[in-house]
Image 1 (cartoon, rainbow, N blue to C red):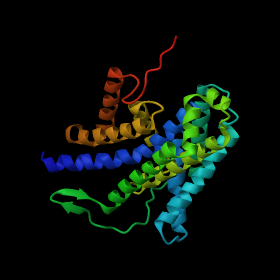
Image 2 (image 1 turned 180 degrees about the vertical axis):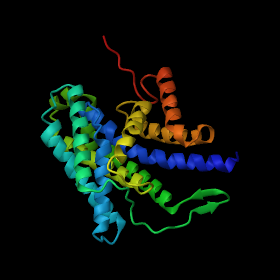
Image 3 (image 1 turned 30 degrees about the vertical axis):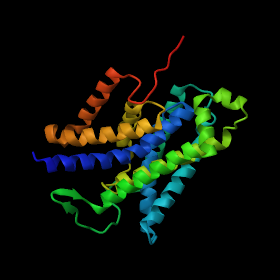
Image 4 (image 1 turned 90 degrees about the vertical axis):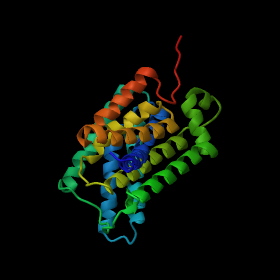
Length: 291
């Protein structure tokens, strides 16, 4: 196998990992603040992908407008699930919230199956040739996906690092009781968090669907890779979630050269298990001590 072949695999893995990083980041932010894994992220991605398809079907002139509309739809959906479900379960255990998220995921999928066809669908994109750089191939759509993912992640990290809202969210995540004692109100930061969850999920769904076919259950297939990326990078660490997603994506693609595409997901989980055996808190996670 040539070096060019492996370069193509690494490039594909990087693009896939950056796309998985969006739902992984959404997962870890909710997990860090609300203290439970919202596994409905996969079906929220699916809703966003179908919403973009619907907006494109009505004739919006630019696909970016369809993406923006899909993000708005999922922001409203995410805020509604927080207000009507998870806010009322805020005092319940993590298991109760997790089961509620699973129920919401199945409900969203069932509603989608009633509203749309179960036949595979694709976005209306023009066919273009891949760029060829001495054997290294890159589709213009892949470059768009990669740049969009990177730009989105930079904006999110900028908000959390440099804005007052981001500092409030970090304070609530680190110590909710101390944040309340310091007169930091959690209402508006938490609303922003759930709106951001919907926006990231929708964008991730659109980017994934732009590279594959769209089915009502396609988002569920990305819940486990996204959650694995969160664990691999370190639970509650946004940078770790992105790093874990990239490592998972590259590991999966490189494994194609040895075990074929059918088993690449197995190799990525083997990497996850190995890392957790050597460092149970994840790559960038911290070990919590108890007395």
